[in-house]
Image (cartoon, rainbow, N blue to C red; front, top):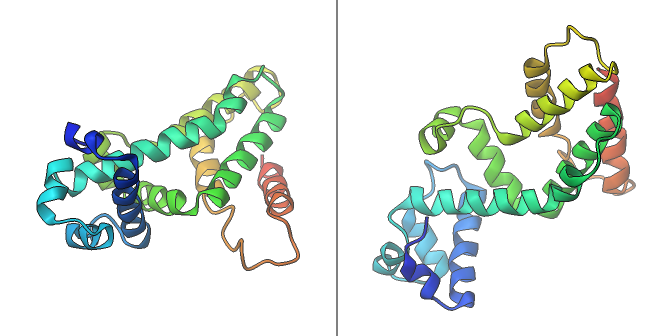
Length: 196
């Protein structure tokens, strides 16, 4: 996480450095990003970077925490809702996740790159499963408990499958001109749900 000197910067300078790091990590993998690219993009000296962050991993973890926080805020209304039927809840989760990806494409590129690299994820966070998989699993278990899903459904496996399928839900958006993103998400999520 950033050193205290980072938080002494003006908000504009903090935003500028974070924006530069976001751009670099969105266009390349963690391994490919160089601190030189970040500081060049941010217009700061190398020594200043090290005044604010320990290393590349430190700034990367900070970006991931920002993305996670933003997505949690975005998804909070769904998580705070009263329990609804499994398929309704799943539709809402899929739609919210895909809309988040569409509204925050840089965040989505960084997160996808991170989650695609299991070794990096385990090294940096000590985790081998993203939080969304746990949320899907919880939904599936509620669906089993309510009788909406088969009692012998393998919830952990299906949660992983749903996660993998939903990460590509917005693929191709932007190339489609006749279809609003909400319509596209609704159509694709119905196809996904029909598999259950």
